[in-house]
Image (cartoon, rainbow, N blue to C red; front, side, top):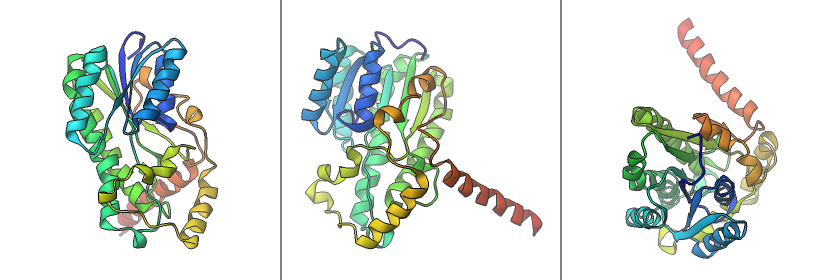
Length: 277
């Protein structure tokens, strides 16, 4: 997509953090934006802010753990602004804590939002995207965690982002012939409400275990290697170019680069070892 003006965008997780920044960015490009979030009140605030700046936006509730909710979002956004051109599947949650302290219910909740929530969102909008072949784009918010094998204290989250990364890259290849582009937004440490993900965890999905001091210190030591938190606006500063140039990945920045290079260097070393034996 080169020209975004007058076209329709839907942003899940659009009420705060990276999602809110994406919503504002697309509105400044004169897109009609649906700000979708489980926190409808905050989504309404973002939409109102966009309208106050002369943009066009509406807030719509969505729970990406529900196929029916995602389907209703697709129907409502279509009624508001027509078939979607740009779908930003951005909703996600963060689970902190060492693997030994996480439960099966923790895993189920994180994967239901980060992996299956993305799948449900894309599936719900696929008919509309296909109707806009050649002028349709999917942005999936992944993470540097999807490229890093290990980040102590974030094992559940990392695993979900690896799965989401594989889904998104495969989706890109499969849709290339359909005229639908797919780009992965790859944030690093970003100051956003994802750090408080438990606030939207239903009681029936379990209750997170507080971080131990040992877990906290382990995570802080790793954060020292991967950089300080950046703003959502900084994170998405290259997103428009990524969309217009149909990039596979839009990297938020370089603090994690060394850790990722070390990981892939080890993979290459393993191939070299195999070749020697």
